[in-house]
Length: 346
Image (cartoon, rainbow, N blue to C red; front, side, top):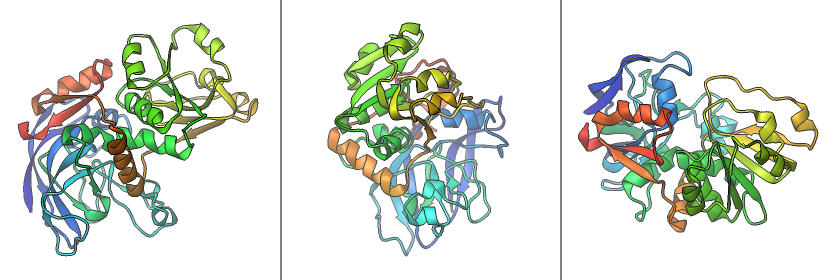
């Protein structure tokens, strides 16, 4: 058993504090990872604040984990000590249902085990990456390519796969017009990936304040959604729209931007319900869809794709003492574009 240093929160309105958590003894196929960096995801904030339902506190969030293998169980075949590895939003699944057998463990019919705020197969609450060590079964560990720094790799384990998966599923590529709603932690990675796939990319943001960045990341076009003329000018323009914002938006207005048979995919997860007028879908055979993360196989594919195309998120590395401040800045949209905790400071 490893005693890991961590940062935990004791309730929706409580600040983060230092904690020590126990990581289980290595099972047959377990890997012990010394965490070097952990990204801060908006999902961490929603969960820590209790906005997505009941939370078992104290909670150690974090599902964008990058580090080094420091020990392996006797049955491990995929990794060895010293390997550069990552862990994303889940750490286990049943492995037997139809979806798991298809490599879509994120949609496990029996429920995957989330990296934090879940319960593992031993009946213990899972605790995440705002810590110095974690134990994960080898099938839920991915390899980080050598040409991606561990600090920059961390956000790819959620922000990267969350945007890559729908872009891949709905075949963004040459000849496709793709719009990304929001140029935040998810959106800026989505723009880079869609551009690398060969799509014509447009950013839809509230204002033009990040236009220079958006174009630098690979977008060909950038529009302010606060300008009502935007929705008139772009009506019927896009094959695919990826909505990355975790806030309530006017879905009908955005659905109107789709071509015939176009799809709007929601990856942002607001705490409140979204409403849609079905006529917005019927009129041009449009689709409103949702997408979570990807499976382990697709997550590895995403990392390899990003390595091949030189894609890394834009990050601001912080110390563990700055987590509360970072949460406030994320909620104020004051980050360009992803906070990453240096876990050596815990």
